[in-house]
Image (tube, one colour):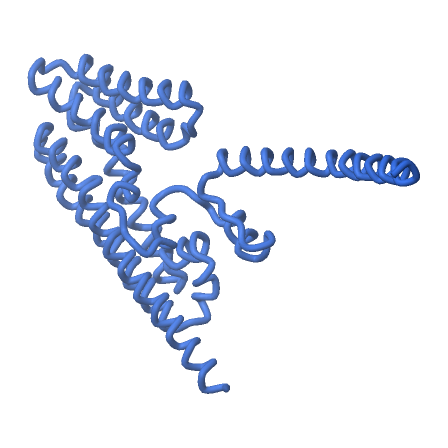
Length: 281
């Protein structure tokens, strides 16, 4: 009993040294886990593959925001397509305020300032909540230009001129991309969904994204035709209503159709790949 005591003491000391040696590693693991948690909290859309492999790299290099993110999803969300309740509010409120105040007061200055104030408020809320303000700033620029133009001209329909210009420009860009055989929907899909990164070498994908781009271009041309007609006839209230109805609701519908086309394409490509692998066995 007496002779074993020193041996047991040395063993206990060795175990203590091992525990002390393991302690920094455990602390390092804890710090790494905390750092990973902070990274995940700042980028909730990022996912890692096993062992930090290709899946993690693809997720980290794939954009996470906007309607394009829906292209990676197996279920469609209309709320995500339009930016959720915040996107709806920030898009519709300035126009709705302008229409209501103009119709009730017939004062372009009051209506224009109220619309601008709504955009500024949206930006302040985003800043306070530490969220990105890019889309809100873009909305403010469009509303501010339209409101100032309408106030200077005294014509309420001029408030909608920036929107008409954006519709025309977007339609032109979409049509040019089709004529150049690089449909814009395909370019966007390749950015947001790595599964179709090689779409330009797939004739089926080129046809699918060409049709989808035509569909988007048709939406913007339709908006331009209806709203330009109302603008030419001086229908301020009707123009505002048309802008609201043909805004997010129509956009969500077209994005849903594009999503269906994209998902069907991905499934066809996966089926062809599986069939080729099966025939090679």
